Image (cartoon, rainbow, N blue to C red; front, side):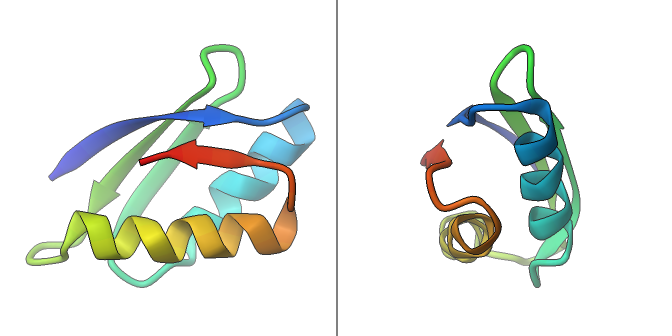
Length: 72
């Protein structure tokens, strides 16, 4: 399943850090962050709970970029 989320991030480098953190999160098959559109597209693993996975993605992103936001 794929979902799109609105994000808030200050720079393209920070957006790249968020993308890498999201990709490493368990339950995420793939993630793409579009800095210009301020969107994160996430493809979830089969059977993963998107709400629970996105809580972990947000935690991972906050570790690499503490002032970022993902609107879940």
